[in-house]
Length: 248
Image (cartoon, rainbow, N blue to C red; front, side, top):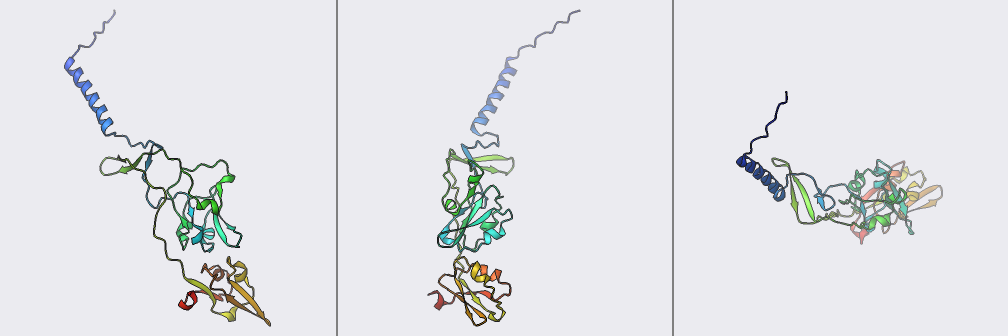
């Protein structure tokens, strides 16, 4: 026995309503898309000012205090000497975890954050960035014409603005620390001269008088980095505020 299946009856009104609903949904998506996908690189997500991108550097603000190298948990920062004997930080991005501990600990804001995160290196060796390379903002080829921001009020949606966001962060720099190293407890000095050997700017000199070593600080050179204070095994040196007559 063969059962014949009858075709559905045509209902022009119901068919027209269905087509109208489909066209309405398409029109809604054209005018106000309901997707939450960012079309990168033609669109770029708006990032907060404290976003941890690659690290920029201003050499003239650096006091060679080594704090960035000491605090780095990934051992990604290496200090490079220049022709004058000063040391400046470079970053190995093969190790860097972009925690920005170095940026937060820098007393003079010589290390600066940025929102640049989409950086390509040709090989592992080129990921080791020197201080001179850090001074120059990398060339960024941008295709984005819109900045996109997530809106979590009610249903999640995207707000798109026809603008380009700056990838460098502007902020007020802290005042340069006005301190210098002085021997507060000279009777504790054992003459090891670790302070003199560790000073990145050769601001400390020593003089042997009989069996006693006396230390002298050149205030014109001293940057107040505090390396000598931290390295002194007998707490001879301290950082003291710069007196007005000394700073002149």
